[in-house]
Image (cartoon, rainbow, N blue to C red):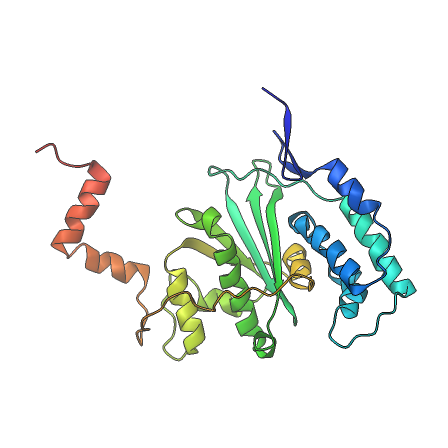
Length: 281
């Protein structure tokens, strides 16, 4: 058995996933861009390792300004500093641990005025929290006009969709630094009928997942916050709601569904077969 394997620019071993040294070395040795096209190419390569880099927001801000429409090309000292700093971050990038169905899973979400961020992590036996993956994207012009609570809710929904394959069918904990979301999206409570329709649709979407939601202070949620401020990532065309035929005036809670399920003959039989297996005769 080989102790480690390089695959698609990543080094995989028993501990987790690392950046491949030779690929990172090529980026680190890259000369300073002399045009918008070269800058886009560099940032595109840097973004390939984005899941390893949780804190690029303020570092790359001068470079993002050069990519804005009608912006004049001016490679200033600030741009050079940002360019060199991004290389240093690559050299000190974090290891991502392997995804494990047996380990507790957390999803930290956050929204800044111009982006969304998320960190998927495992809680290890010693109580430490290690990242499985980082993710971020920019807000659209419409989304940037949302209220803060709507931005935070959008970050939560987007993050769950982003990591759907890791989250669906298992328990996980959502971590947010926005306390109002705890009341709105608590899996043990029905959402108020006076809540905005958009948040009601989000709550309906969350009903398909088995989760808990907890508050984490802004300082402790630094990784997700940093990712939300990373603005170089391209906008995604994901709709705010994948599919929703209608929304009832009152969303059912899991307890109400369970209570009505035991009264239904067909569903009771289904539950019995799932729990005890298909009958022999």
